[in-house]
Image (cartoon, rainbow, N blue to C red):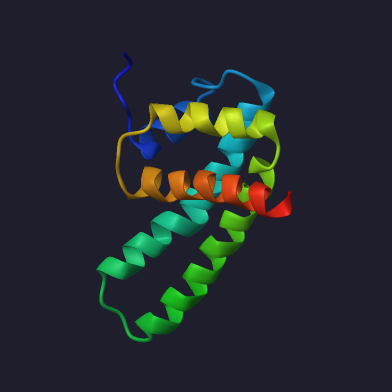
Length: 116
């Protein structure tokens, strides 16, 4: 069994051209990279610091993460992207990132069921 890695390690490996098994995985990894670097990690950092107007910044960042979440959910409607996403998730350690991404995967299943 392969030892799970952090999202930062996975994304670094991805940027170096490693860890990607298909074109779809490369594409979903790119979306995860943007979701993490421009959205989720900034939101997590904002939660842990004290700044003026913190609530305003948190709201803006939470809205951005929701938009990126929607983009990921849209891709997960495609079974090939969903499988690539699952492959990436299988490599990650259990933490807030994996938990959030796993919830998106679960939401994608329920979204499909609601459409049927």
